[in-house]
Image (cartoon, rainbow over all chains, first blue to last red; front, top):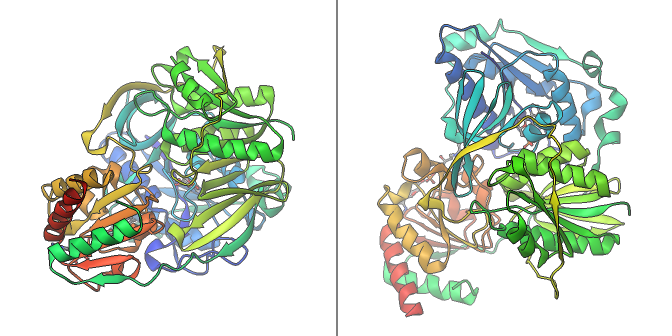
Length: 263
Length: 326
Ligand SMILES: Cc1cc2nc3c(=O)[nH]c(=O)nc-3n(C[C@H](O)[C@H](O)[C@H](O)COP(=O)(O)OP(=O)(O)OC[C@H]3O[C@@H](n4cnc5c(N)ncnc54)[C@H](O)[C@@H]3O)c2cc1C
Ligand SMILES: Nc1ncnc2c1ncn2[C@@H]1O[C@H](COP(=O)(O)O)[C@@H](O)[C@H]1O
């Protein structure tokens, strides 16, 4: 089975240092890059899928559109067990919008062979949650989203899709694109062996020229949106701390909620 | 302005119109009024008329698209392709969807087919300099931005609860359409569906959330939270620690890899307020936390912190709420 995992390097949310620059870009210098949380779940799902089929041939390829600063994050994905990575890095891509991301990822996918493409349901630095759907639409590939389980068999794939109030079962032919959630299971930590092996795995860097994408059609000049203002949120007032016994505490909370017309 | 402002007529699991669609419709109407364009809704289903009529209470014109490919409820790909086809036929200035799972799926596909730039997860939509302005929040509300489109069109996804849905004085018209032309996107079939009792209402749309963390202690502890949620007219949410422990389904997890919510009231029971949880809820209107540790991180961003045992405080709170409504 050949699986591509769309893996976006993002500023590490756990660092607490994520921020936008004054002109509204994700500040990549503010925090170290890690693979986006949901994309790690996708990678873990890919690893479990191939481990469940020890007799087949496998390849897991990480694909990212990222500046050079994303390399270490991809290296960690290789240490978890992915076989290789393709990284599209080009100065012209700075400030690209989502349509460019979709086009670039599409261009890479057209050069690869795969049974499944896995993406994250959304990203911690963008949270748009649309790139997977956009790539599926352009390829075109069947699109199965918000997966809690992924079961390929006999040229088809079945996904339990989480909905707001439960789940639904989706089925489609392979190859297909699936967006992944935490419900697929916690990602493994790279083993020492994995870390050693990752050193000799390939991270292939491709430019826009390599992909046949015209640099004039990407980046800031081609972006369809602009950020007018970046500001801090309005401060919440000081926290009111209640240390009374439960009944008295409850009375005060209800009075506070009533004041704010919440009860 | 060439083209209309299109609205995805999102459906709930039971086939009725989702509340978010009344909110996106209201926002779209305001954009259309400013742009001098028409606001048009699209409902795609095997039997779309009921939901389309409901949507027409909020929009002057709604297409009820009957689609045999849709099954009982269309997959996102079918809905998005039909919206894109109508948009190509009549012209698209803007497309507006909800920012929940259903809306995102449709936005991603239709947006890519129509090549629309995107402003996502709007927390407010306004108008300025000849186009819509969209407020977004970065990193769970650490920073706020106001953005606009560079050209005269785009796609906007809007979070639940940021627009007050306002019906029209007189309902708009519903036009029934049969769309049977073949689909470009490969088929995805929905072969089963399950609604879990734990999440009878969408947590993203809830106005009150009673959320529990590891401090709730177990699945039984969530019973009290459910009663509190009922008393407050809300739903139950959870942290990843509670989800990972198997106490409550992932569907109601709030945070970085769960849902991002903006209720009017967030009651946090036995939740530390870790950064990955905080990004999912810190823009809530009012945050009340119950934690036995006064130094838990949530103390830094709650409006009220009750220091104490969450079960004891929870029971007292339930009694006080019931007294009040008695
Ligand atoms: C990639 C990634 C993604 C993540 N995504 C999410 C996410 O989406 N959502 C999420 O929530 N977390 C997420 N996490 C996990 C997050 O880091 C925290 O581990 C989690 O939020 C902690 O949950 P908690 O507050 O329930 O538990 P804890 O941090 O253990 O806190 C429990 C709290 O309960 C209090 N307490 C204990 N007993 C009682 C009692 N009887 N009465 C009152 N108070 C009591 C304690 O003082 C403590 O403050 C993610 C982590 C990673 C690495
Ligand atoms: N630059 C990128 N490189 C690789 N994958 C990406 C990139 N941007 C988005 N994706 C994929 O698309 C998913 C959704 O992203 P988004 O729509 O930006 O929230 C992510 O979880 C990734 O799987």
